[in-house]
Image 1 (cartoon, helix red, strand yellow):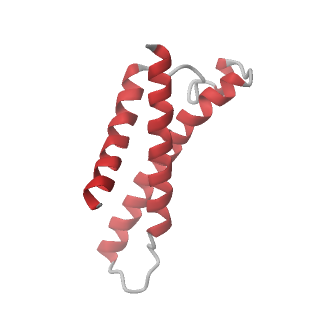
Image 2 (image 1 turned 90 degrees about the vertical axis):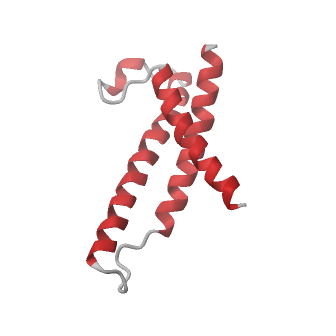
Length: 107
């Protein structure tokens, strides 16, 4: 069961990172035609996708670092290198499911 959670976590992390990078590539908060409100909305969208990308990238990096022999306590309390908890897997899988659903809906 633990291995299945780790695999699901990695797949979901990959999907979220890929979508976040795709969204960030399309955001242009400096476009001259944007009003201040739209610029703020796009900036908040960019911040949200950057945070999701960083969190999902951590889900991909942690198992790789553990496999390379990096001690779990190396990252300190903010960047713990441990197996994902059920809550972490479910949240990341939820975001990945929403992304896949949107892609399927778009055709």
